[in-house]
Structures are given as structure tokens and as C-alpha cells.
Length: 285
Image (cartoon, rainbow, N blue to C red; front, top):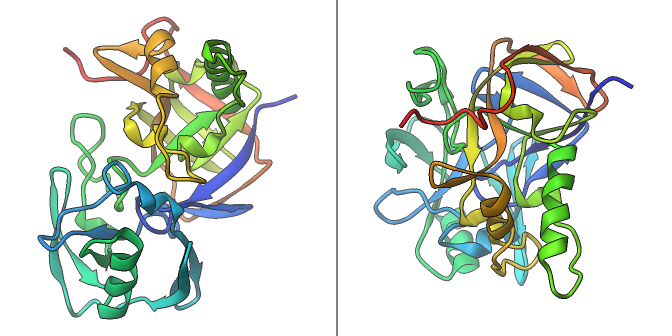
């Protein structure tokens, strides 16, 4: 059986719950609708679930007019895509750019959800934000994703990790779901950890560059259903997937084709790869 695309996920608001979809349009900066919204503090700096764990309980859904937001103990709220004429400066890691305020009603809703003063902003033009030049090309762009347009994971690598996670548990815990890792695309039918060696891949009619492994942070330790934190998967990744002081799971992709629709069930093909054994693509030290 050929390798296949088994899941597509988009995350309308950075660090909030994702949407599983059957198909998605690939744009130069990521999947259509992925991470075009973000929550910021009063100074305009990004707030993520790393420090505001309850963001993972917020469920945004893309609508024809913008977003519908829902969360435990709050009424649902419809947010219209704001007029890009009004811009405000925001910061996301080393990126400094302008985004569009979503308005007082959305700000008040998210402030109640997180129990702190926050603001919702929209990225009207993703061409504003370049990717890291160390792992991509000058014309590459990204939305409000951490660093690159898409994240890929494989079912086989998750199974290999879960072998370690379950074996390390004294209580016979359940395996971790893929939602812990928030990938945009999931493939199956490959060897565990083979993604370390890929450099160009094809999903359906879309071609991507694999530009960097994904170093994992505390966000993966937050249960997406409860917002509670634990030690896994970082504890197990540190045993089997540790290089250069970081733990790694998944690979970051940059599209080489755009305005192409990918669908669950599409054939997956490795177009270019390097010999195995070097681990994930990572900074040269």
C-alpha cells in the first residue's frame, strides 16, 4: 500500500484548538485559514498556550464572515473579519509586524476566557512575515505559526513514541493522541522517524520542502481536553529523540506549489532524501 495523507488540521487562532478537515488549499504561507488570528497582551506581544494553558480549550471555527468562538462556561461569539484599514503593531518571537484589531467584543470574550487583559488580532496579509532565513528562502512567508508554514507528523513516529510513553508509565496510561503535537498534515505508511531524512515530498499534487525538524516545547505537555500539564511527551522524547539539548517530533514544511488542494487519502511520496542517521534537520552547532 502506498503512503497516504491521513489527517489535515488547521488552527484558526494560534494556540487554540484546531479543526480537522477533509481537504485544504495550500497557500504559500500555510493552509488556507491556518493561524491567521492571534491573541496578544496589552503591549501587543503574542500570548500562547505555553503560558496561558486555557487557550487550548478555546474552539475557533472558520465561518464565511470570520470566526465563531466557543469555550467552557462562555457563550459562543461570532467575530467578523475586521477592516484592514486599522492596524496595530504586534510581536511574535523575533517578528515585528502590523495586524488588525478584532474589536472590543472579541477582546472582552478572550479576556474572560483567560482571566487577564488580552486582545485578538487578525493577519490580513501573510506576506508581511518572512520565515527564518536560516532554514528557508528569501521569498518564503508564514502566518502566525511559530516559524514555518506547515508541520507534518507521521502515525508511525507517534506509535514509536507511545511505545516509550506507555512503557514508562506505572499506571498503564493511554497512548498520547496526535492532537498533542498540533500537526497540519499527518501521513501513514512510512517507517518511524523516516521524516528526519526527507528534503522534498509530495502530497497529492502539492510539493513541499522539508526545512527543519520541530523542536518540541512545554505546549506538548498540555492536555488539549483539560488544559492540565504533565511530564509527557517531553520525558519520553528526551530518552529517544534528544539532539543538541532539544527534543524533536515532526518536520516543518514550506510549500513549493500553492493554490493546490490536498485531501485526506492523497498519495504521499518522498521526492528527495538524505541517508539516515543524522537525526532531524537542526541548527549547525
